[in-house]
Image (cartoon, rainbow, N blue to C red):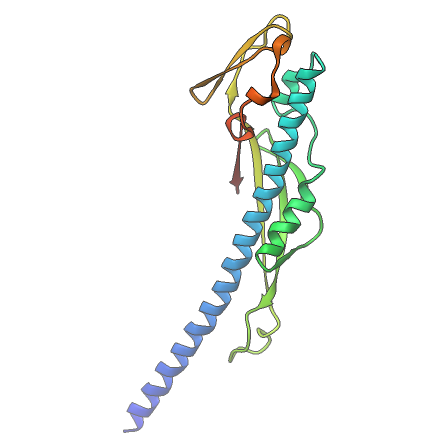
Length: 190
């Protein structure tokens, strides 16, 4: 009988301990999801700014529109607000700024997140007030391969992941311009 009580106590303790670790893992996963969403939101906002800048440069007959297409121009004015909004949608807050980074040669954003919720009460002291924290980085990669024309104002074809996109700066119609997602991909990196 004493062995049965002793084994039952050990099993109950193990079950409670697994529950506590599951609570902590759930909070950590929630924090990582919020960080991923915030980093992607910042990068997608910057990607949209790249396309807006590209369209404006083509309309203005600016010779440097290829810099916009290659992702070489500085953007990200709305990235902070976009990251904060997605963090809030995931019951979290952005710690600090959405930081512009260059990862593998591509521009991107790194964010740090803290959840608004905690692990909660458990048998492990000090965990009741612990928030989840995580970070994530998302980059913007041009999808289009191009050979710069001799004159940047001449009609130009791009190969964007197997799709042909024609840009004619001389007869440019912004309504016919491809979506930002066709020109640039946004993805998470380690």
